[in-house]
Length: 355
Ligand code: COI
Image (cartoon, rainbow, N blue to C red; front, top):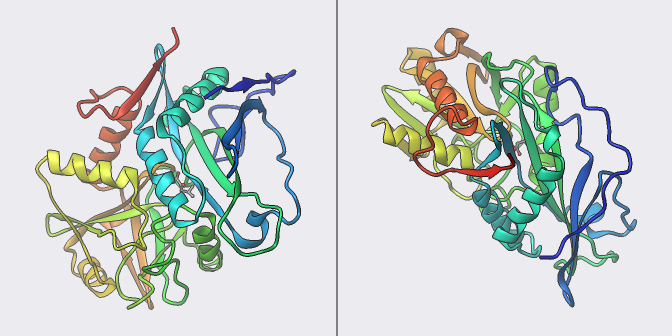
């Protein structure tokens, strides 16, 4: 892929890397390319970070034809490394297939990403717990109001230096289990990483926040009985010495952190069950103490302990509202691999040497 590079004339002042929050600052450049049925992907370019002109009838503004990914780059002594980027772009192609958007060439897209990060390398923060969050996204860009599969699309990658996703940091998050709204149904778009899934989650999230909860835990949309995911993360529960996580039924996002944590747990000899887990089973386990730890997994969330579970009037504490031993061990192992402190025995890191 030939990439045209236009460098920013003035570079922005960097934010305080000790106080980044999540997704608030953006680097100096972004990658953009366009798709049409006649030309395929074309006009690949790295340009100064800025607004994207959109036709008022653009498909994405009316019918939500948008997909995205979330991944991270970590600064190393001689450059940086990314965690399993090919998995993200493969998943993006699965999302594209579901929303009738064009697929990407995984290797070429990683090459384009590397070129972009190399240009904005100084934006990779080096403070503990920070990283450069990578947000690739694609949207349908037909200039017509007809409802049909997309003929024109735009793909963009933006970069944002980040700290913790949750304001709580590594302190346990409070979760309420949603009993009215549903996020996704089987046969729908739950497994795809598309903006619409997140839009559907906002009302419950807003009401939960007003009640003091950080996030909503979704139940399945058919029986409204089985635990699915949190939206910003997949979930895992340590019950009676077994790690139980909702199986991928089609309405749960196939998380790359989820898959990696399952692999680490199995390699360590833990018993892991990917299965249907009913809310009643979960709440009974929380009540009788057989649920010893709960955590979420995600690129943004990393491994986030869950300290409180609320459902239909029952407000239960997990692991004394402290980070559990296994949760901490998983956090240390995963971030150790990602930041290059722990040997990457599974070849998960994509290393870029610049020095
Ligand atoms: C991620 O973990 O990267 C996500 O995409 C979750 C959220 C920030 C939408």
